[in-house]
Image (cartoon, rainbow, N blue to C red; front, side):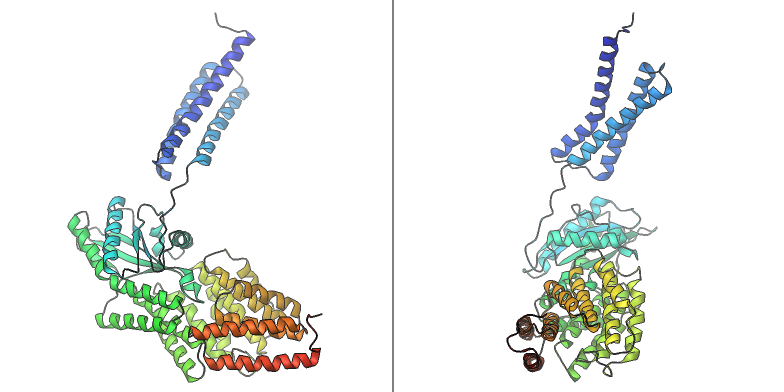
Length: 548
């Protein structure tokens, strides 16, 4: 007869829950063992395995409940189901918590390295392994064609970048993941692409290049992916011959990419004039060939314009105006429908602002073009809210809006209505992206000027110190040190003023050696500092060391 004693019921209960617990843990534990042995599962197989385990577990619990608890009240059966669910969810949580992390990506050690992230299929009709094979072959061929100072490595299969988003207007996830990928691999340029196949079997590949935010001095908004001209394969690339044809065409275009990488490296190392010449040669070659290479012509135009503007920062007079006009022509040559169109629109507003304020950068009343500044302010408001531009581009547009509005306030064209403060707050609250630190420093400098305009020199000094602590560009830091000196001397903090003046001259001297400032500008700063310090000493007394 059945054992209805309390001890018998207790033993059955212990046996039941032990069996359920063992069943709940066996599949996740098996998955952990598999992964510990080195066969890391991708998310899809892992989810399928967990769902299969859940289905078996539900059937087992259902059988046990029907056999052991069929005569019990409904509430008791619900409690059993709840406890069983907790057991299974707990085991899955253990699986996710103790999954081994993916192996780190191989880090390249050079300053001009290229990472091939792989190719993605539009519509999902391409074999993933075939795509990875093409990427690996392309990386191998590229390494043999470009200068030995540049390393090339394929990360196809190891990198999980959502490259299918390359044609999306909102590709924030792709941009963020690529930025992390570039940081982890130390690649200066990331190469990828989109593959599509039509009904007739023709295959088209659109190559794409990604530029890191920290590669471009003072222009982090240029970061991101740029799609190149499509490469057509008359037949599908299931055959080795078709794949060889495709990789051969890509390899033929590698020379353009190598020169582009060389230009970026030259620019980053403080030679914008030489970088501009390299980019100009690329544009000439594109015009002669009549077709785009691996690097889109609009991308070359965009960077060529910024290199010219970087040169203009170290010039004055007609030379400055000529460089700014040439940069403007580059931006205007990029159509609004181009993948680089919105970046060009943002760059065009920066160019208009520089032309509107002239070489003195003072924004004093009567020295600026009021109509141009109003037009730039309106355009930047639209760009700051444009979802089609990159996240870093929207941050740059917001920071530039603060700059333009502060200039209009200083020039007494408008009253301070809080726009500057709101724009700076938006930049401070923006996500922490590669390249955003420089924009935050820039926004803090605008906040400092705004505070000084209100007569709050203590806040102005604090804000400009924050900007100096995070800024890197020498000419910009020279200006900020000069502001710190002026405001400190106004507060009779002569010690800080003297130190800040010397720091400003040190930054300008470094910029002059790098070709980013001319000697006339250094002399103007020296003369202005001597006069400013003498007046402060006469007003405050030479013994005053700290502001009150």
